[in-house]
Length: 146
Image (cartoon, rainbow, N blue to C red; front, side, top):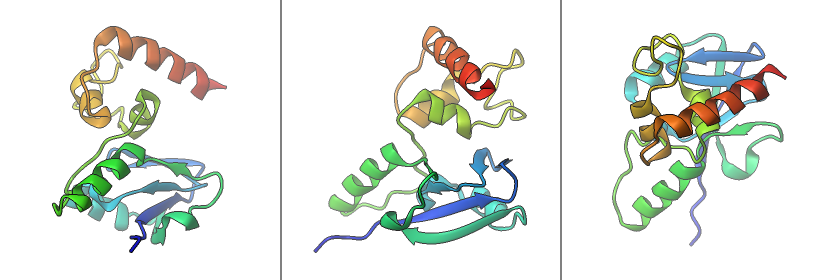
């Protein structure tokens, strides 16, 4: 029997909006519930400038940002092992990680305006060094400016 993956589609009223350390767009951002702590989830659910609904993976609209690719693999593995996956928050690329970080949070960004290595490493599920971060962040900022 095939399991249907349920995802949360969070849509911002504005073109882009940040809440609870995550970035959202008006095209929608698909995430797994396990990517949020309970506190983050409450902040998102109670934010009037965000709409959140549970959908199946095949219902994700075109243009929506899918921010759970690595998390999905881990969740499927955890389901296969009969374990419960909680507070799991990883992505596959540094660009995806940058989009999830909150520049006003000192745990996410240094005083020099660079993403914290520890936060990035947690999000991508592997160690990230400063040179790798700096190169990827420069590319990310250049693409965001276009």
